[in-house]
Length: 573
Image 1 (cartoon, rainbow, N blue to C red):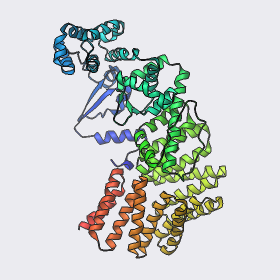
Image 2 (cartoon, rainbow, N blue to C red):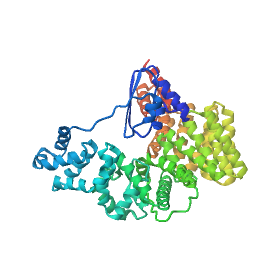
Image 3 (cartoon, rainbow, N blue to C red):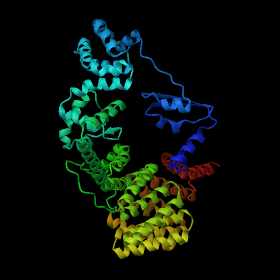
Image 4 (cartoon, helix red, strand yellow):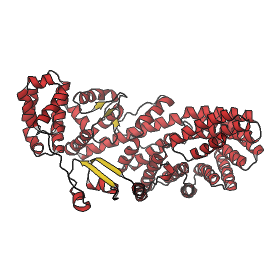
């Protein structure tokens, strides 16, 4: 579904989910469920839907309260267990040690997970006798009580312990602390922060974990856990790491993400307003982001991790880190079109800032939430956030904050087709930026004012204001501002009848937006360029650029895609 139709409120999201399934013949598979509570909201409760749940938990609550029918999966038969080993480690080795194979099958209680892990170790240590593996199982006999009882989770824990207990102390500590990382993958630098060492010092213990098959190294150079191994590591951390050490490790990890994310943000948005970061945590060495390309690569690699790190910061009471990390992530999420993540992270930031009673942080967060709401088409919500931000900035006496808020308010009023108010907010922003001596803000306000004037048909005055904005942005080497203003000037020249100048400005804007990774701005400029090609009686050129706009808007899931489709349809007629 388009992002703007997907609610962020849980109950509304749940209602949409269930209404979408209503009346459909659907087989819903919920794999590896953690608990009855995790599953229950996902049950469709429609006669036409069948739900199949797999879990390591018995889910007795679902059986007792929801009428679920349990199907217990039995262990493998002896011959099936032997066949599993034969397929994994090869028929020659199985045939060479039949007694050891029989012992392995028995000691593993014919559980597929335990057998698969035994086979994996045999495959990676070709010189290791299967009889030796069987002896190791016997040595750990006391840990197989749960395995003998058919508890798959217990079996995994016991089998994992073979590799874990063979680790050096530093690798074992790293393994435990990696259980505190909430992402699906982790970089070496983040692992170093958890351990409190330099990145160069974490390579050896990471390599040891890879050799022990406790983590997997991906082609990207990042590392990942199997889900059971992650749970095992987290369990070990809770059992063997004192609370103070766990909290210190989480602080280092969150601080690493905050400082690296902030450095990456400075590379992709060098003219952006800066905030004073919290005091650095001891033992943290953030990445040195060398340039814009490296910054974008880091954001792509860590996009899934950073939002959950923000949640982890909130969970551990690190509220300053939480709102500041959300702030540092905002530009990337906006440009790349990850607007639902933008809303979620800023809502977490607003809660954190409220608990801190940090009114300046609350104002910033309300302003960012307004921009995210605009991207999702929620203009009334955006206006509410902006009014709250204005009130806070007024109480704090922050003229620049008010100016930045008026800029966004102008945008909202434009989208609500309240153009006179849009002009008024832009003019207020211009006065405030000039009073503060903020030239980048002055350029932004001039562009916004000129754009709104153009929408009202006052193209001559619009040309003057946007031209002044362009000159300032060029002087400041402000590429995002240049991309926006060149787009505005393309629109103005189009309506003044200078179509060649319009195309030239549009092309410059598109090139800059592409460099910045600002997909939405690039898409809207492609769309306007198509209008100019139509005015020049060049329908094939119009169709070509509209298709480019459509591809980007579909990628973003933005409703503006429908407008571009309509243009293409009219062109075809």
